[in-house]
Amino acid sequence: MCITFKNALHKAPFVVLSVTVILHSCVSYKHTPYFKDLPQAAVLNQDIDNHSPVVIQPNDVLNITVKSLSKEAEQFAPSPTRITIGTEEDETRDGYLVNPNGEIYLPLIGNLKVSGLTTIEVNDLITKQLKNHLKDPVVNVRLVNFKVSVFGDVGKPGIYTVTNERITVLEAIILAGDLNKEAVRTNILLIREINKQRQFIRLDIESQSIFKSPYFYLKNNDLIYVETKKSHDTRRALIDNILTASAVVTFVLLLFRF
Image (cartoon, rainbow, N blue to C red; front, side, top):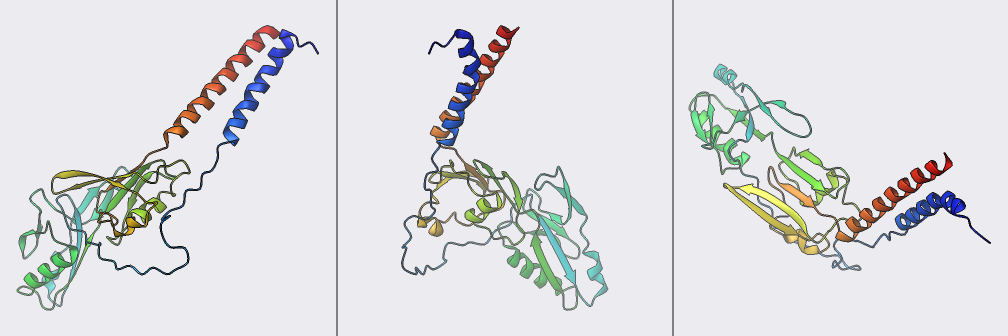
């Protein structure tokens, strides 16, 4: 059967589109399990000895409430502090801002060094000092600007607030909608700023060793970046080029019709 040039032009967009669909549908979903080296038919007990509590740093915001039988406790009403959390430009939280020297200013106490301490340690410190001024003081200290950021090849990149000062790298990934199928699971990048230094740590969540990593539990302001497999980038570029070619052929066909 003879195929004219005009008929070929008519069929070209269909052929190009078909090839594109086939290429896209033939992308194999590779088996990408987590913790591949965990035993399959046994219970493995593992001590949790790699968790370290979050310590307070400059620019953190502490919510401090004080209750007492003494009327002077009413002075503990921190002014609202504007902080950036999540997708909101600014949020207002009641709290004491830790200054660059690692201190907060409290009524009846004055300047108090809190950087390097946990919220429990700050709670005990404030309670001890207030006993000289208040009757049976009850103190509660919370860190209100604890957040982690997850971006790259995940379902829902974003900044996520942590309310209990304890979150693992796996929980952060779950919050971000889990990893996409083409994400690199063996080379996840954790970026951490602590003690005026920036650390870059590589993590492998295909191995059970992630559970024993000293970086399994995240700190305030941690960043998690997930990269995409290079083969996926190449395939996506190929599909984009084919779609572009399809649009050009369709345009040419329209010109021939007129």
